[in-house]
Every structure is written in C-alpha cells, then in structure tokens.
Image (cartoon, rainbow, N blue to C red; front, side):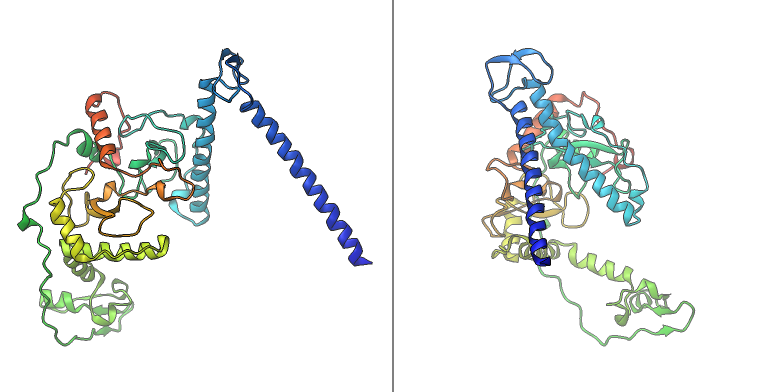
Length: 381
C-alpha cells in the first residue's frame, strides 16, 4: 500500500517538474522571439523604440544588439571575479579582505588599458576583453582592476614598461653569437663523503649547514625551519639549495631540461599527447632561431626573469613534437583557446607573428597619444 502511494507521489512530482520546465521553456522562447524574431528591412527596435533598420534576424537595431551582446559577455566575467573573491575570503586570503566593488557600469570599457586597441566582447575571439589586476597582491577593486586584451593577461604579468619595450620602442635585436649559446653539459664535481649535519639541542633547535660552514670556514648554525625536509639530512639549507638550483637551471642546457620535463608533465596531465621532443632538438631550435623569439624577434634569456625562454606549440591540439614547437619569450606563451572542443576554427587568444606586428603597427601609429592605465607599483621592468 505504501509502495503504491510512493509511486503515485513520484509520478505527481515528475508531472509538476515537467510542467515547470515547459513553462520556463515557453517563457524563454518568448524572450528569444522578442529579441531574435523575424526581422524586416526597417521597423521599430524593441529596446529603444527607434524607427531604424534592424539587424539581420533580430528585432533590435545594430547599436542595441551590440550592447546586448556586450552585456551577455561581461556578466560572466563579473561573476568570475565575485566567485574568486569569495573563495579568497573563505580561505582567509588577504586578497579577500577588500570589498569587491566591481559593477557592470564600471566594466563598460572599450579600449585596452595597455595598448589602446579596441577590445572584442565575444568568446573565442582575438583581442578579447579580460580583467587584469594591477597589483596581484590585492583583490578585485575598482582602483585595482583594468581591462586588457586577453593576449596580455597571463601569469607573466605585462606592465606598461614591458609593453612599451616590446611593441613601441622595439627596433630589432641582434641575434646571439654562437659562442653565447653554449649548451654543453656542465662539468660535475668530484663525489665525496657526505658529512652528516650536527643537531644542536637548543630551543628552538639549530642545525649546522655544511655548505655554509665550508664556504665561511667556521660552523654556521641555522634554525631547523631553514632546512627543507628533503635536504636536512644532507646538511644544506634552503638558501644554499636555491643557489645550487639556480646554478644548474640558469644556463641554457639546464633551462631546456626543466622546460622539457614540464612539457612532458603537462602533456600527460592535459592532452595525453606527450610527443617525441628531445633535448638535442631544443638545442637545435635555439641555434636555428639564433636565440630570438619566434613571434617577436626579441632576445630570449635562460635565467629567471623577464623575456625568459619558453616552449610554445603552434597547434595546441597536437603534442610536443619537433615540427609543432617553437621557442618564444614566456610573455608570449599564453593559453590558446583554439584547442577547446567548443572553439570555432578561427578562435584566438594566443600569439602569432602577424598579431605581434599588428600591435606594433597600431601602437607606433598611435604614438602613445591617448593616456592609458599607469601602474605605479609595476612601472619598472
């Protein structure tokens, strides 16, 4: 008996849910017909009520249609900023302490704050509008957020000085000499007995760093917190370990070894297309490009800092192969949306040689006449 009642209630609930879905679909259909109904050559815009030629297959005039598409595009951007601010606040991150006062009205910006180029408010497009924080240590506030083209919004933050250096004042860099691109393997030191560290029973306890002791000639004691868990048994503090890693990864060969390891890890995690790229092929690419970025012809550097060498795939849907990869500055290695399954064939977001030349031509013609966003905290290279 109870089972029959439960079945009847389930059927009734399903019928109610189906009625709500149909009602919502009809309401949404009426709204779509109001906005995108049968269009005539001329008529009255349903938004501004002007007697004007209507856009194709739409009951809105061209300006209203552009504004409608813009609002549809920027609303998700605002929601993403608010969602990230909430995550910071819930996690106790200092970036969530400030009030997120971004509104749709404050997002009505037409040109890029760094280049002055007009931004596009359409997904999977070139020169797409994107919010950028001037100071990465702060949250999303009106005075800390500006809007730039998506190509300039990435982890290696572009500043006005870097944009001016790469696009406006750039007049060509001479290529490296062959002697400057030394990729020979470093000579390994002689292996010897490892001296175990000595623990001093203080409060807090201290450990003797063998590397600092050897360099200074006297015992150097450091707090236990200055040692990583993996290096405390070797008697090497974090500072000495960082210096050693910099000496290994700083030259070209060490930088390429790290790049190749990161590429293999990224390919396994995302695309499952590892490729067959080798260290010798990367070195051959460096000599073939003569140390210059494939997109911008700027000099690349092996050590950490600005314009560091990075590995770029020409086709993001293909793995890391010799024919599909080039060397670029890390500032020009951004996420390419063309590899998304929902992206159209002409999707943008990444850099290319024609796009770099487009920005350079635009900025050199403009001659920096229009004022752009100046970041007081990031105005130096």
